Image 1 (cartoon, one colour):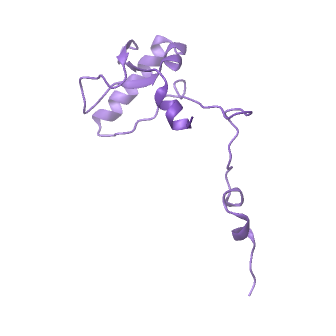
Image 2 (cartoon, one colour):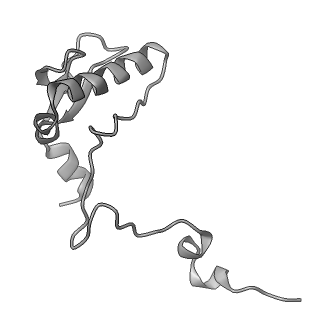
Image 3 (cartoon, helix red, strand yellow):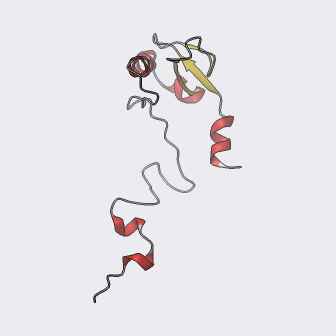
Length: 109
């Protein structure tokens, strides 16, 4: 099963600005400025104040016209790769890791 399919199949819940889990994701009445959604497991692992903080951040950004508002640090959803930790990245910073072998060689005229 693909990663996107796995991500979509998770049980996502809606968080109101008070930090309460109030229903399924996508059921917000305010379509222009919806509530924050998180996977149920992540939402339940956060304290009520942490859930409220990330929901308030989403509402605040949405009222300013932003369509994508990142989670707070505590509410970030991290994915682990098979056999690795969340910090393991396939590509690291620096063009040498991103460029293919053919483009790494320097040519002199």
